[in-house]
Amino acid sequence: MNAVISVSNPLLRITDLRVDFGSHTALRDVSFDLFAGETLGLVGESGSGKSTLARAILRLVRSSHGSVVWRGRDLLSCDSRELRALRRDLQIVFQDPLASLNPRMTVGEAIAEPLCIFEGALNARERTGRVAAMLERVGLTAHMISRFPHEFSGGQCQRIGIARAMILSPKLLVCDEPVSSLDVSIQGQIVNLLLDLQRDVGTAMIFISHNLAVVRHLSHRILVMYAGRLVEIAPRDALFAAPIHPYSRALLAAVPSPTPVSRTVQASAAPVEASSSQPVTTGCAFRGRCAYAVAVCAITIPPLEEMTPGHWAACHRGRELPASGLGTFRGC
Amino acid sequence: MSGLFDDAARRLRSNPGALCAMFIILSMVALTLIGPWFNPNGGEALDWSHVASQPALQSAHWFGTDRLGRDLFARTLQGTRVSLAVGLVASAVSLLVGIGYGGVAGYVGGRTDHVMMRIIEILSGLPLIFFVIFLTVIFGRNEYLLFLSIGAVGWLTMARIVRGQTLSIRQREFIEAAVASGAGTARIIAKHVIPNVIGPVIVYATLTVPQIIMFESFLSFLGLGIQEPRASLGTLIAEGAGEMEAAPWILLVPGGFLAVLLLCLNIFGDGLRDALDVKER
Image (cartoon, rainbow over all chains, first blue to last red; front, side, top):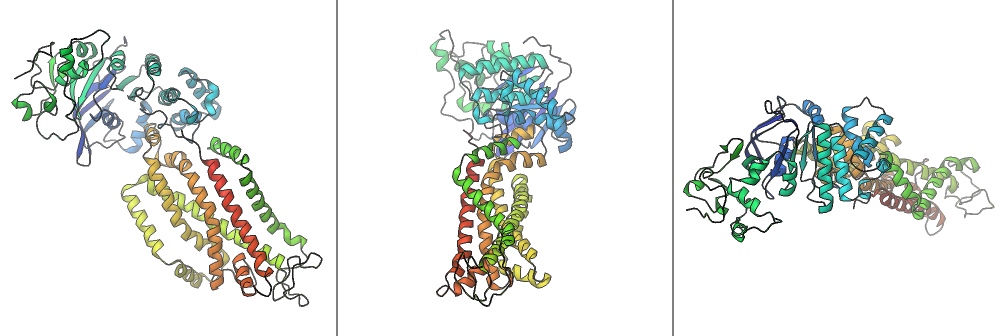
């Protein structure tokens, strides 16, 4: 958490990113910066576009508009040869650890794949040495190198996925809900492993999760997504202390707390019957679930504005809503 | 890949049925290759003193003779060799072309896939017999041409199967992981797609061998394939069918060879599928 973050020059600058799947727009108007060594937490409910954003950044899905500038190069406009070369520094850990490993490849072959692609000069023995060292580094043993993925548990498979992603010491690691399919007892181990590796390598990280406790533990800044848009960007402590967007408030209020909270806060959380996947063509997508919605919310889409320094939110009423006590304020 | 095949070989060794079938196939191959040296009779020599004689170990003709007095043992071995060669070569051609074509169509997808599949549809719309007659007329009668033309048509189905398998593999997350790792299209097809489609494809290939042997028999029967004095199992069976009542062994000997061969190929194909089928969960 104490990594030095350079704020002068972003490692990654995303501008107006938009992804369409047919007539459905999964992601729109997404803009943010990521700095070297920084961990961005990305939270939001299912279908809010978190995974799509992860894939769009790495150009695993086609974006229809916008730019993803990685150290001065736009990933969306460079040709496939150049993109492949850049992938050396951009790696991803997937949600389903077993599905992300080729069932026909041994663990050793899977982890060695980035080495085979980017460090062709290594001979077989050097490669095996690197893979064995990496296996040990992620908490497995070197003799597992010739086993197949189905012989491992979910947590072990995720360690293998992390080993594959980290073997080239990438500058950016995107983690797409890496712990959500694992047992709670394993989640902590995997998160700590990621933190350890990040500390050693200095990798910047985009960490997607719907588990706010995990995101809070890892992130420097947190992005909140709703219906394909960023609705709030804030430093971790600022978000947890004083969320601005009503959706963020509902999200935080929904977190079970070790200390009993007043029932009124719980009760004010957004009604669940409305779905964020319903097409909203005008106005704020959240207004149907928002306790503070006013007339303007149905007409114009709220832009992402800097409410307090470093704390951005996309809400027409962001400045006027009280900082706390969201259970008592019911709006107009 | 090496891990994959070591593993498959280990599993195949623990399957007695498949091992047995493999052993029989290999001994038949060996017999067709070295058998003629132990048999005093050539396949084309006519023995006028033994016309359509019964099988008997004490005579010179162990499996008897046909109605022209040719030694049935020699002819059956020669026929088995030709049939196996046609089956294996044509299957290999269809396997190679089919995997390459289907893999590219399925993985690249989009317009490429569209065009490639339309080409397959046009080709499979051509009647095979016309195609073979056409080739025979242009290039003259030639056994290798026969291999080639059967293989050239056999790959159409193979390509469709490979494409279908590839389409489903392509959706899997490990392909996305490979793309994210920086792997190029050729590497992904070779290392990730093909090893995962190879199981069903190999099984289909072992089932293609008998199909092609049958098809060759059919062509030979029509006069487009193997011609006298050369023999294949198909021509021998056709010949034997005519003498079925008077001299059943002329049908039964090559028929038995074909039946055993097809049975063993099928059992072996089945065992191979089990061996290549990595449990995923």
